[in-house]
Image (cartoon, rainbow, N blue to C red; front, side, top):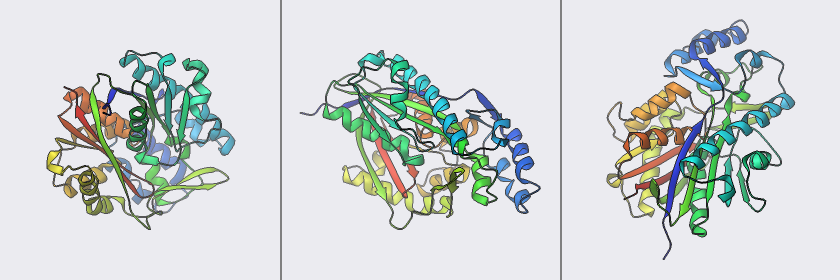
Length: 350
């Protein structure tokens, strides 16, 4: 009989530079105000985003320097490696394990390119064994925290007793672009921050929760909703559709379908837990799922304190839910490029 996969720990990390949202707004005005006629109208997003502060791998002034692929890539390798070590180390400590005990590492990141991938860059500093299996995954965006957890859980299930370390690292601030005078770019500078989260999973052990099921839903002809455009300067954000109305209309039916394939219904879920892409998206999800306004309290708190960090953000919310007392059954969900909905159901350990 297959042994259940346990989520043994969740940990988070942020870089050292804390940017107050008022300072971010002032910096955006300095960078765009005199060059973009629509800036003053769009700048209201800094106030309505629900974000109080964010963390970045570089000080605010660095983003005003001439930046191309070499500068952004160097910052990615440096900042992402340190965040990987911080988050992974905390997750292993919480699971009472050492890096030498890790058999497989799954790394999720969509905000920088590294070959060899991040886990190879940090292997010596972490102390991984030479025979560790590396599973780097690129391109999942905001859904990566949930999809990556699903991938890690299936790998743990396939080899009972093996230790799977899952790390999501995103440096969204490296895509801040002074050269792009677009609504999408202004919104990105108001929403995104940097961070990392890590989980340890193992089949047949005790832990925080059982990973009960997972699933995805992909909508056809939606490639233009979210993603990266790539040019000589680096990544440029794509937000070509109104995401909150799409989430309100489409997310609940998709989740119902994912649960149904596992023999579950929404009524079986004690706590729906979401990746908080922004306050409008959180409100849209509450409405679309028939939740009372303000139900998604942990999502709003994480958004306020850290901004949208892409993939790790859902795991920041999960960590907060766990600290508050994990309900009997929690469904962790996120949306990301594709356009995709991803879900993982967690049952509190007895």
